Image 1 (spheres, rainbow, N blue to C red):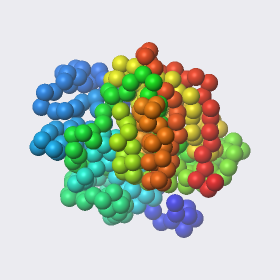
Image 2 (tube, rainbow, N blue to C red; image 1 turned 90 degrees about the vertical axis):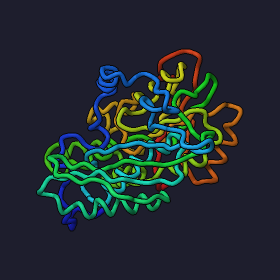
Image 3 (cartoon, rainbow, N blue to C red; image 1 turned 180 degrees about the vertical axis):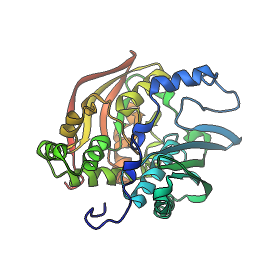
Image 4 (cartoon, rainbow, N blue to C red; image 1 turned 120 degrees about the vertical axis):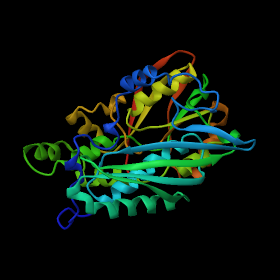
Length: 344
């Protein structure tokens, strides 16, 4: 993250009331909207679609086309980093379904006139991130918009046997997370630069707020491609942790699979727990919105050793965070809170 004292970049976050994936429509409102227009029923033309992280359609006996779209408001002021986060977050929905081949990105970009010059660096960040994911930016659409937005549409392919969906989890499976939680608290605290509340944040934080935010940004700009590649041989179900938070995304996975989930561990970016309590984000209850979070993966118990070895070899962070049960809903079972720092 650039040094604020010399950074000429426009304060993008000041042009939006909600930031990152916290700008998403609430889970209940979204479900009602889809039901109102009849999009909750199975679509015969698709292998899966509405209700999953992306849509998959067979285009050959050995190949499926996966598509998804995602965009949001800035969670960071630096335009280049905003672009990188937006690209990683968008592609994550495709990676959550096991797809990553032939990745093609179509950019969605909207900016207020006063910060239109930021468009170059936002786009540069998107292009660099997509290149890191072995994809290509093929075009897109740019508009003038009151709130800055960035993201796009991702198209990718995968063999049908590699596809994952949320409904595949089964009782006795173990649940794993491939990034720690806490991006909302980290970036929310970092955006408060002066005034009495800034002093309160500094007094509350257990580490320098800048260090916490830098680690959150590093996680948000880490693509989930390596996690997807290393895990899809073993996983039975997957989703990515974004605006609905750990609790909302886990509830969705449990409901689609007709199972229950017990959450037993919460890996948190070191320093975000206290900040979340100050802001009232509900991080320790799984309610805090995450932006460009990790994959939540369900893995049969008999394959967890192989799975963990695969992720370790790929250099992918992972923690077992719970288990799948024969019940329903999501419960917290005296979860262990683990503070995660990339520096140690």
